Image (cartoon, rainbow, N blue to C red; front, side, top):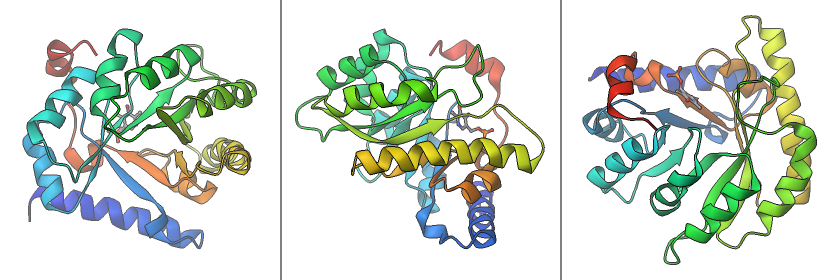
Length: 237
Ligand SMILES: *Cc1c(COP(=O)(O)O)cnc(C)c1O
């Protein structure tokens, strides 16, 4: 067994255990394998082990892998900060964008989404820990932005995404994740197409799942540590 296959099984087991802990069905929870900085060969190993959903943070790097692998069975999620001048590449190549946090970028993605493709699935990013330096909107801004995005023809509003500030105790993690889950449920009542809460990484996955997350984003535990030095040299987002 390759180490990526082994790691994927371990992560799936963690998801199953976390789901069992709170009486949820593990099939409700999608594992997004975060492959940023990793070569296409690593993604191929994960695909061979049954993984289909991949997350990328850097536009050009992600597009290169999407085009190289050219596998219609794979589902590609853009999960990095998005600048306006890169929106076209996301609209043309990815299936999902998790980091929509302003109308301007949503409008561009909608305009730039090619007609033959289905609408781009989008998540609104929430700055749930209200960190100065982080992207995402405040929860108070959500109703207005959701309404504007839902009206755009080539986007499909699917839900919410957040990257909570790291906290090492479970109770604090759970409290933040529950705030996200409450906002998600409220959004779902207004927009029937909303079905995805992208929340939970390696360190807060258990709390995220207990709160109701149905998409967790895991990189290192699947692909191993990233080499940020060479990664930074080969892309500037
Ligand atoms: C890198 C990244 C992840 C995965 O992080 P790991 O620590 O490697 O599991 C998840 N979500 C986002 C938004 C990321 O940028």
